[in-house]
Length: 236
Image (cartoon, rainbow, N blue to C red; front, side, top):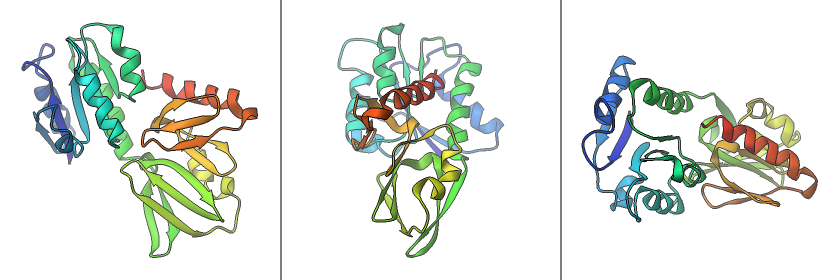
């Protein structure tokens, strides 16, 4: 079940209310969704939702500030912003927004964004050998992978970490199925990052949504930038 929070002023943001559009989307696909309208000030409650709609309109603080606080607190779910104009788009996408809408929000526009969200839920998975046994990890849930002392540490978007048993092959070979997906990039011999989970790329490191830092060697800075830009363009 998908959980959705509507932190929006007013009941409608287009020809049909957002709630009705979401309900129709999931109903038509035979999936269930729980849709609530919690207070934007209740950050602990918001952390449990898969998708949050926020307003980027009006005086500050607004939904952008709520989103920044959520990301700082480790929220890894999806964010959709509604705004009166394009002036806050860059700030919204720096917070890894799933979409930035300037109303009216029509069914086709919202469906495209929700398709990307639900596709991530149905993403391929890896079977990782760990001490308890084989652990199934959905690729879309991986924030980054770190290799230390021949062990893979999968850092997930929900804050969990799953460690493999000792590797007997190089990192690139062990993660070959993951690296076949363009969303994943290896900037360093010991790391693989999910580009969809990157908040910022500096000259020397990827800054992940969780706040973790992944190094980028100087000689790979241009390549890392190109990979990051290509992934970001797919979000528009």
